[in-house]
Structure formats: C-alpha cells, structure tokens
Image (cartoon, rainbow, N blue to C red; front, side, top):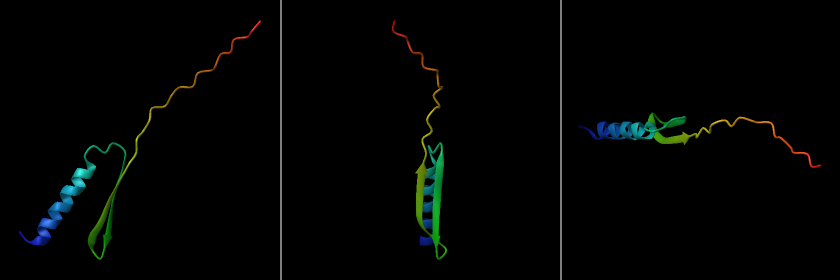
Length: 61
C-alpha cells in the first residue's frame, strides 16, 4: 500500500473516531490544495427544558 493510501485510511479512521458518540454537533473538514489540513469537532450538549410553574406567594397576616 502506498503512503498516500495509508494516510487516507488514517484520515478516515480519525473522522470515524470523531463521529463516534457525537449526539449533537458538527465535524468540519478543512481542505487546502486538495488535501485535508484540519478536522474540527464541535459538540453541543442539549439540556432538557424545565417546565415553568407559577410561583405561589403566601400572604402574611
């Protein structure tokens, strides 16, 4: 296997590893002169919405 083929396999494995476990987010691949030069992973963590309940105030008498 040529060096170019091994590098492509390494890049593919790196991208696959970055995608594993990513629930919400993006994987961005930057290409310069037809070569991948950078891979960024932006992961978002979604929080569950909390229901708003009207606050009750006790009157003091």
